[in-house]
Amino acid sequence: MADSTLGRVRVAAALAWAAHPAATVAAAVLGVLAGAAPVATAWLTKLVLDALAMGEGAAALVPLGVGLGLAGLAVIVLPHVSVYAQAQLRRSLRLLIYDRLFRAVNRHPGLSRFENPAFHDTLRLAYESSHNAPDRLVVGALTIGQALITLSGFVVTLFAVSPVMVAVIVVAALPSLRVQLMLSRERAEVMWQITPAMRRQVFFGDLLTRPEAAKEVRLFGLGDYLRTRMLDEVSGVNRAERDVDRRTLRSQGMMALLGSVVAAGGLLWAILSAASGGISVGDVTVFVAAVAGVQMALTAIVSQWADAHNALLMFGHYTAVTDAEPDLPVPAEPTPLPGLRDGIELRDVWFRYSEEHPWILRGVDLFIPSGRTVALVGVNGAGKSTLVKLLCRLYDPVKGQISWDGVDLRDASPDELRGRIGAVFQDYMDYDLTAAENIMLGDLTAAADHDRVHDSARQAGVHEVITALPRGYDTMLSRVFGDRDDQAGVALSGGQWQRLALARAFMRWRQDLLILDEPSSGLDAEAEHEVHSSLRRYRGDRTSVLISHRLGTVRDADLIVVLSDGRIVERGTHDELMAAGGEYARLFTLQSSGYERGPAPEDDAPGDGGPGDGGPEDSLRTATPSTRSAGR
Image (cartoon, rainbow, N blue to C red; front, side, top):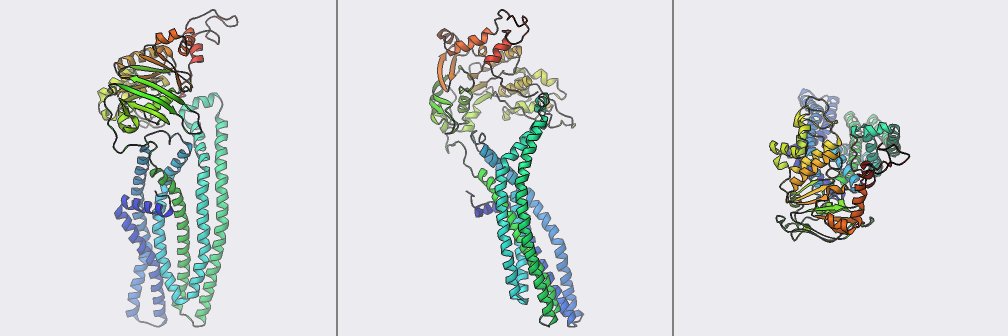
């Protein structure tokens, strides 16, 4: 774990070497030369002036002049070459940093970290610090090394002229070092404190600019409200940053004044000593250069060290992400999963998202037979979607066990398990990619199989929609990114996106387990009928778990399981549950009654579709929650 300053320094150094060894060596060597060049220039200037004062001839002056010219050339050229080497290193380092950061993110097989706001803050700071923190660390280390070489050379020079002045200048720099470190720590703490506000700022700004939100923002007149909320967050961030900037200005101003007083006193001493014959004219020149060089080197060291210290603190978020253990335990030698022949068993499964949250599932016992369709029904919050997350091993049960043909899911590889599952989730994704890419993401191994992509689209009933697009399957489905001719992409309707998500699931037709979480919630009645007919053909004899609030779509399931408050309260076929007259029968009757038109209330016109009309819209509005409002 790189949880200490030294540990983070080692990590940054190792990253620089791994990213570009040649550029790292070149930057270090150039830094040494660039640090030595000002000292050499000052000494050669002293020697030239003293030689002139002593009346030396050309034989002595020419070599000194050539050396001084070369040193001056080095002072001018080396920084540019060094910047080039550092830029090469910076680019390679950034690529490696991103690669390792997102490898670490992908190493978490579950959802617990991604549904945790604190981890989101850490991840955001890790991503931001990966932009420049490693650069600042490496470049800062090189700059500090260069300044130390310059400082050492000028300290030796000053010591030869006046040991007392060396002590005065170094002691004067110590308060500045302490102040800079204190300020860097404050800045890092402020960044952590304002991160939630910065996330909210981005959130409100995103709502004001996203095409999906534009309709409701304008319909409900939310523009000024959201703008005000965003500006409030920006103002809070600005206040926190301004307070730190003011403290920085006061502290650095006092340190600069102290340095100026020390430099002025040293210069006065040198002039008076030269006037009395204590030191030569060359000594005065090199003394002036040394005082300026020492102060500049000390300033560079202090400021770069403070910046590097701040970068180290920020880099701690990066190492926190890259060093974090997976959110779910992954066995070193996972048990292979057999093809699903018997079934999936949940035995006394309890689950809650944390100790502060209530139990979502309470002692669930359920067997999902191979080759059968099991439907999960119940009101919102009953635990249906959470149970699906456990089946996909996005979480582990707090208590109890889930087994696949006798193999505990904890003992299996999450990747192998998910490779056996096809799924359509209620909160499906719509990717800002082409139509073909949106489908082939369901099975990357078949990305080049265009026939399979087209066949999946046909099964989902979206093939004709895609072929009618300007570029067919190559059409960009986004208002954010342009197409190849830089024109805006095409935006699909919510129902069309849902069919596209279904096509993505159909790419996995060979999988052992099919999970369908509200697969037709955004479709009209005709489209819903077509989709479920296609799904019945697609399911065939595969093991399926179906979740739907529209109970008419689950009545042909082999087993219907009713969840309430995290417990299974009923199970059986449709006919058995209707005969039992329990919760399922109540919900089914409530929904189906909406399709039986009764007498129109006196205060409503018959068949006007308004409240109290008794039409199916009222029934479904009462019994079926809205599932996805994409704002399209």
